Structure formats: C-alpha cells, structure tokens
Length: 85
Image (cartoon, one colour):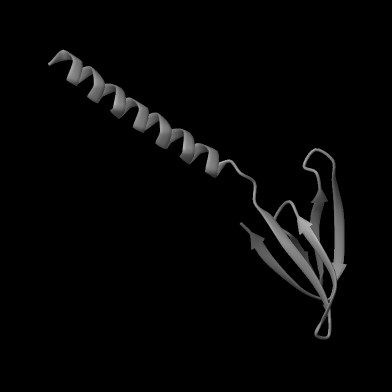
C-alpha cells in the first residue's frame, strides 16, 4: 500500500514540475518580427526585428541583430510587420 502511494505521489510531483518548467520556458522566449518595406507592390527590404517596432510619425524604428548588441533601423514608407513563431 505504501509503495503504491509513493509511486502515485512521485508521478504527480513529476507532472507538476514538467508543466511548470514547460510553461515558464515558453513564456520566456523573446518574440521576433518580420518587417517588410514596400515600393508599390514590390518588397524592397526585409528585416527580422528583435523587438516590437515603434512608429515615430511616418518612420518605423526597430532593432535588429543580437539582443546583446542590437542595431537600430529606421524606415520610411509603406511597411508591414508580422510576428514570427
């Protein structure tokens, strides 16, 4: 009887630890975005932004590169922003 209770408790603890670890890991992943600049119907530039772009008037400002040494990019014109999975 004690053995069955021990095994059931161990399985429950393992399940809780697995769920907590998976949930916290997936929430800590930074999001990235694809930014495209258009000229008419043609795409003239594509970037992978490491943060959500900020609209500053008619200009879009975003960071590219590595999070430790990001570079700022400014584009002006018709653009689109898509979240990458």
